[in-house]
Image (tube, rainbow, N blue to C red; front, side, top):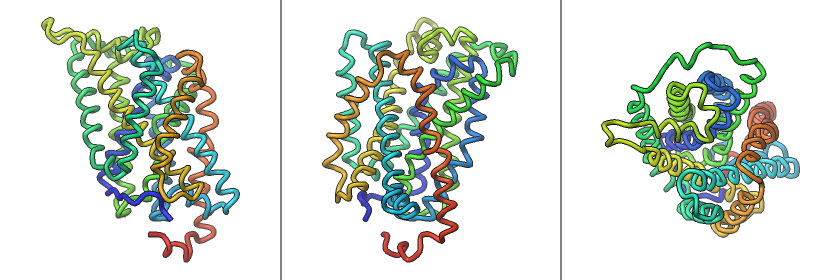
Length: 368
């Protein structure tokens, strides 16, 4: 039995994925300190590595239509092992969501409203996400294009306004960094912006038709990746190697916009865009979390869990790190390690086992 009754179409899936990936724009800063002026290359390499795996998520969802990740795990691995795998995914959802909620608090405390208590931002943001989740995936799908268009507008407009300050020699020399740093950067990018789309295995079961799912997923992923690439290129072209010394290269580059003393201090645009995009990503993650927990425990509705789990996320986000530096270090090292099996191993393995065992069998007819 499915917890969620709402449906989305393949066009909405495209915008959901694009907006979800765009919500990781802030996390480019984690990679810049490692890959410097070659960040744009790392993004492209991360996309190339992640795309086939992400398309395997779609293949798995198409093989089990109408089913979410928890249901698929139960069918593929059995009741007990399947629930253990699902709990591993729930741990991943909890930690990743708390990281992203904390990103918003650090954004506002550092750049926008320094005198406001940190916990205030976490509570207000989590409560807003909880309200969005109560509306269901169908509503989030219907408004997803608005978030994507907002993100694209800010990214493209700021790129154009900074063209006169760009120096494309900042990208040279190519292939200067040691391979180990490039490898670590590719690992971070393939896990954080792209690999986190494994969460959509909790959403793709709500597709009303799956025939265009692969194409829409690829286009959505491409739009999100292009957004990340444009931001990386803009920051490197404007700031050069100095981008590694700033807490947020995006804010620093946008602050350099000065057109006729009229268009100045445009960094508020970045604040608005990043808040909107992270809100969308966190809403999707919270939705995935509450549905996964509800499905795991056999509840009839996920709504009673929305506020309690949002409150738990606030507590985790407020206490899990000692400082932004600690946040960055743990994300760069621990976070990208425990996520690897969930992103790169279990979904393709589940697809392989399902094909070998001929799943789903008669159970397919029971699912609506």
